[in-house]
Image (cartoon, rainbow, N blue to C red; front, side):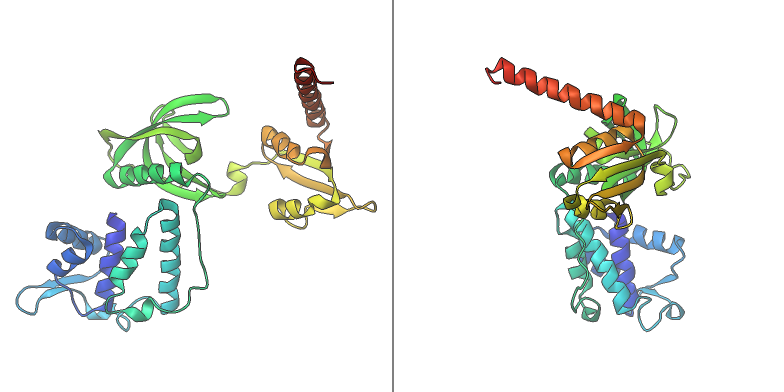
Length: 310
């Protein structure tokens, strides 16, 4: 990708006296014209790059911009490597690992040593996520619209968007873009997208606002939950809500209190505890859960009767 290549070019220029366009072209396996465009983009971004013609010519960053050949400490570079390797875990490729190998030539001090932090962003849906991520990245880079079928709580709909940001948040992947049908910016969860494809239509880039990803903005809360859990549910409550979400009672049960965002998600979550949880409040949702349990019992009773059971 373009940004990966430009990061690589910048790293090489920060660690060497100069480099030639043919050399960079060979390293990154692109044409000299592409390298020249990358250099122009870096200059526009404020990097003071100079080019010299002739026998001892080449591309370099002016001396005053260098700090002992690099702007990054070894620790900072190691953090970058950790992040890039995490992206490899998403794509199921070794693209960023190969980039690091290319950059390691002549600058091994930055790429050796123990890696104490490992990030794996892959998921159970890696086979379906990786192609979507590649399409979205291509659409953003090329300024092309993308289309997909989107499944939401109120039903599915066909969407066409101008994508601007690919986001990993709340343990899931999202794309933020201008939705043509809603005439506004929207956040779409990749796992709810199907039949994703890159459109032939290009779009003029907007000054897109960065999405407000504060938890209270997306997950507004509003449902005051009080429930009692059996003692052996403690590990799950701690994992999902932290150790301060419950109070241990005299009989060993756990009185749980928290704000919840979505009623349907709350009901589904409680049912995963089967008979080890009892919802106390809100009363209205407690009654709705009770009715659901009765309907479930009725369905299972009917199934047993139809199969000659009890």
